[in-house]
Image (spheres, rainbow, N blue to C red):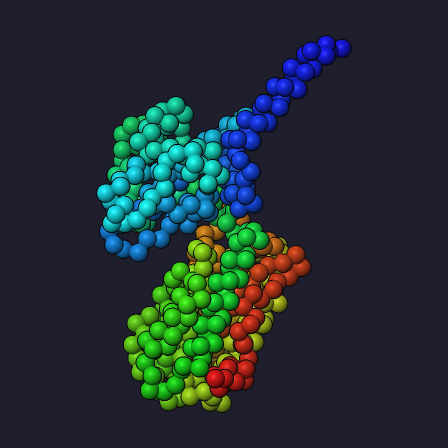
Length: 437
Ligand SMILES: [Mn+2]
């Protein structure tokens, strides 16, 4: 039995430990907790290994975009930051390194976060130190034989972050010659494929903005107008509704351009009888949208255009029916097959040939922080919370006829939900949309 004095002492010690932890992490917000739990989940995947996750840096006057893996783990957009994660058996250490502030430079390029405890509390990250301390911190981890996972691809010169950091990486390799740099993208992809509520809210907002931009575009399209005029209306709508930027170069492809999958010059004058493919997406708080519709420039489809349009729509429906948890998404999967079979068994080209050969791209990709979102190579099965596109298309160059319909779909417990359903898909509804004022 314990003496009551000892009990008082023990209670006292426990109380001070709670107080200490409380001051160390003063009431993390729900958002801070979410980022902290992502870091924990990521570290669990890597077991005992160390990670260095680099953010992009600010380069000259070019538009600054944060690295999406870095953002996913921190919610931080500070240029030039580096996150060091060192999982341990008892305690995980997370340290964010920030560039030393240069007040003279800040007069040109703006305020930067300071490497101190106040920033740590703001971000909900254990420690925030000056980047100068990176070497000391790494040596304390006995890096001489460690593997280090990074978000820079092995061929790092290919990525913006890789180019920005090639000097730092070379320096780290010089400091620790035995270091083995490994690619963290598969571990990150595994986590990023399944979206949280916070992420879904942002993605739905990006979709909502993109739907509104499509609606405005539908009313703008007419023969005599240039593709870039439609692009201007769309991108005005993005920005005016709070999107940061287009998630990818806007595609406004009319007439013969509609048969070119990634046409993005957008400089042709639209002609009577053309179709125009509009494949655009807003980026909202770092999350992308990706929605495609095909409009008749005159406001009404010809019989032939409607015939092919309905084949594409039927293929999209056939693909949608396949979506549920457990279905494999990959090369030649059942979703792709369903769309291909539908296209190949409906309609003909002018030589009487089947149309399968005119469906020349993948039916689907994940969407998220990136428009073609990061995935895990190890796992291709659909799970609830994943968001994918369904985008069949038929492109017949000899008829100047290209049609694509693309929606975003959330995989649910039993099937799917189209999150872009506010935008009409049916050919008659498309014509009505173009008439609205
Ligand atoms: Mn797409």
